[in-house]
Amino acid sequence: MAKYERILLKLSGEVLAGGKGFGIDPAQVTSLAAEVAEVARTGVQIGLVVGGGNFFRGVAAAANNMDRVTADHMGMLATVLNALALQDALEKQGIPTRVMTAIAMAQVAEPYIRRRAIRHLEKGRIVIFAGGTSNPYFSTDTTATLRALEIHAQIVAKATSVDGVYDKDPKKFADAVRYDEISYTEVLTKGLAVIDASAIAMCRDNKLPIMVFNLTRTGNIMRMSMGETVGTTIR
Image (cartoon, rainbow, N blue to C red; front, side, top):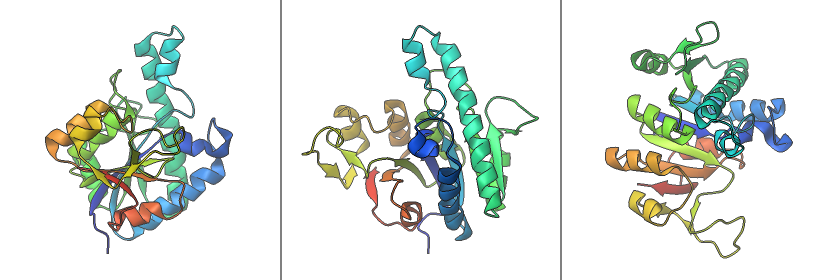
């Protein structure tokens, strides 16, 4: 029995690249879609936000003298590419899926309309929210939090390459300590860069929990939806 009726799953764009590091790895997307589809079949309603880092990283481009607003708009368009790839893979798994974009592109996807998104979820469709918030200076972490609040998701599940929140970077420090649970305020005051500060603050102000877990372990999306402790809960 799933613990959550409705979740917002946040994926980084890099995960779609697999071992290639750039672009989309079809095998990786198929594998990921199979896991998400398995959860959807249990009746869990899934909203999904995916980044665009496998194609374009706005902040990095801005550092290379590109205008930040232009760079961020390019990053938003990259999320649409990823959303369409995921939609195709999910529908091949037999799961009806809708891509809704914050930037109007009617020939490609539906415009984001909150009530329509909720109706899709109620009908058992996965909804992929693409195009960020349509505003520059906001990350896909913030997009995920915003959409989660708008659709009344019970949790934001952030899938990463590490198995939770640590007191320091576990890839650089062997003595890094993982938290099973941590407060929003601790994440902010300790400067733990696991999720954007604006997203953390938004969740704190609205009492929306966040689960940070490792996507690379097969079955973790299902375990998370069942309420197992597969990472760190921020609450």
